[in-house]
Picture 1 (spheres, rainbow, N blue to C red):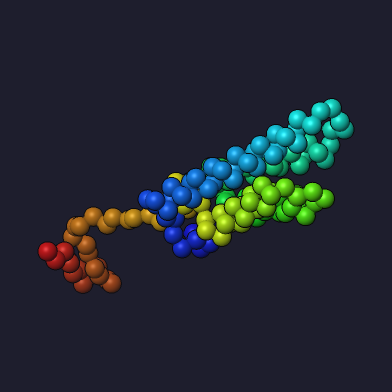
Picture 2 (cartoon, rainbow, N blue to C red):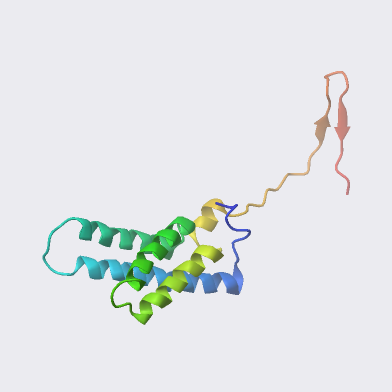
Length: 143
């Protein structure tokens, strides 16, 4: 995952990505709930598609597996945009989801927590450097 994004920006850019994720994720979840609430009808593919909308929305909202969720979300929204009567809000949502897929989730996300850069501290201590037990060299840290 870390290879997909060079960094997980924090500070103001991270907050901007968080706001973008919240707006896009909430819109995707709302679209899924709207599909579920379309009244009694045949249970089947419509319910599955509605559940996919909701799962993708929650994944983008939390920043979990963002590249995959954004790709699937962009595909779902593109189906709305290319449909018979695309709403301007659908075009905006498509742009938001595509931007998240390209920019990444930011520092305030599940992806950053799981796959972000880590700082490794090596304690300063005497280290033994030797190829054989007869040649033992002790390296002292320089100060």
